[in-house]
Length: 521
Picture (tube, rainbow, N blue to C red):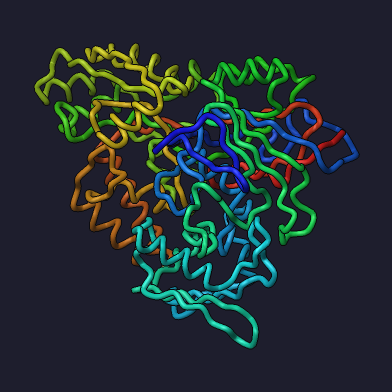
């Protein structure tokens, strides 16, 4: 795809720099900080609010795509597009679902049929009215592209019920967990070049994109929900890494950013409010199960026993983090297998014994490939070097740029190990577990296990809630028993805001809802 330095929308052409993000960061309760609200350290005590103005947000990666119907996008891209596009429903802050483009819905026939009444008068950013045909078009495009979850759709129908527009979705078989997939942004059916002209119904529209510099959102004058958004303009400014974000914050070039570890303590509380919020991702030392010696479960278990997760949290994250040995986040408490909080307690002797049994009594060389733009992952890898040396594993770190990581690691699977955090595209255990299916294209750890495939397959088709939860937990135990990777923690993230902004709310997804932010002075 051709890349342009300066891009725009409306009367201008738009080009996108491809970059993908699987980003990280999750919550844990830390005394003296707010969780999901700005009542924490240095929190503003202003009693007046004002609308209008601009918020400049620093981020360390650019979106992969601005088209919600492109499967290339992940965490950072989805976080931005959360403010631009809306689905039939939107996540709520309490892990539920709120109607969005739909005004109401019913789930019928034990999850076989989903019946949506569309909200009247919803408009796209260009002022055209959203119709049931737009919804049908969007969902069919996602199904045709075999988006995760959308292959379950048997039929999508637009109905006119006494001048009330409805959309009826019928699945191939009942699934009471299908609703999370319907957060997919609805697009106009007559806009073929969505990358050049992104049109949604969300609170903000994209007005310009300058690659390697910034992306600008402006308030949607047609937005259906009264009272939001508050700010007129949101500018995302791209920074090279976390250290660059800190410099930009301290220098007054940006107003907000996500920060972790030592960066938190380097911000002056008289200038910034710090808000702890969950971003729902699992940091891990991902292991390529397809190559020697990591194709031996004894070797993978040895690495798990050699890694001291709490020491990583203490050194690289200044004690802020929640250890977790599961491939899903503890925040999905209904489905999280609590026995996996620490499935491989540190045991150097056991690790050495397992390595000897596998034929590596003196250890082996291991290369950890790390995306250099994520300082916290580089810091984690450096701690791992010292820990793994205790069992004879001579570890080296290969830092690469994000594009190389995507090509070599995520897509090409040409790596031994990598430190990364994985989020979920939907608020469901499926979003975390589906990537471990033997046939999944996103299975970059190359885990192949027919037992997991069977149990997970039963979980996603089980109608009974209790049985489904038990199957999801069994799926996690299978992954843990096979030591697929070394699962580390939910990293504690803080949103830093320059004094004068408030209103941040958190969701059980990796999103940043800028529509609720307002100025206090």
